[in-house]
Length: 289
Image 1 (spheres, rainbow, N blue to C red):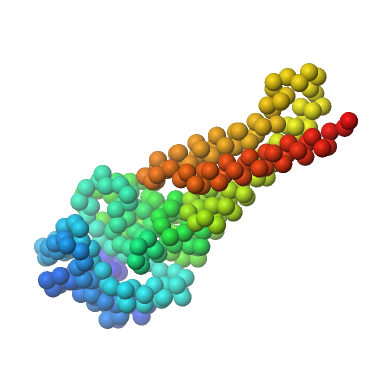
Image 2 (image 1 turned 90 degrees about the vertical axis):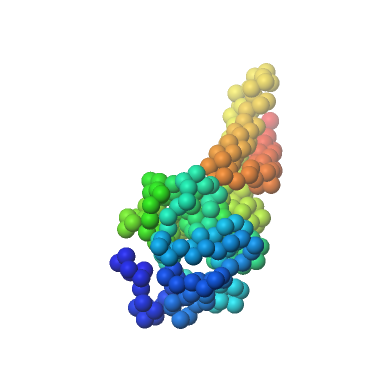
């Protein structure tokens, strides 16, 4: 699309696929770019052509897919360019769908997703696979904050360029995420085992170690009778970090509509416990006799 009108296949030599929804076959939508592949019906659901509404209607379970050969070609092109944009005209059937419900996705078999544009109630979600985000949708995605969707035709452009994700709805930028910056603070977003371990250590170990050692030295100097507080205080930073981790994961899981990530929380608690013990031992060793 360009300026609200369908782009011609010759308009942009970087165009990978163009589906204008102006003609269909019994179970397929035609690609107009001359480079992509027609979308074919997969699954046991039904495909209904809606010429008056400029689109198609799918009855679950079904999807329209390019097939693996064309999908790999498009994936390779996007990987080499390091930037791309998705453009679509959509009319949501309802505004209570959570998930997010897939509007457009580029994925391989199973859970090996690469790109996802989806709907979550009145908002849009745009996610791109990166080295730290793993194989599935994570909180490292851009979500509109102004609930721009309604039961009307809506123009959506999703852009990935130079490590930034942007969403434009009806010509207005409605969401933005800088992966280079926001990846550093997206603690509960790490989905791969390696990323979970790395970020659990990065965030929790220094905090628990330093504060446990500090509290241990402080209480060692001021304790006169081995009070309950003096015994407990070196462990307070670790307990506080564990509580914040559990609270943060609960909030993130609830807002993202996913299950509580018990393995990640367990790993974080283990890292905190080790750091707290090391800090306690360090503070005890440095106390004067």
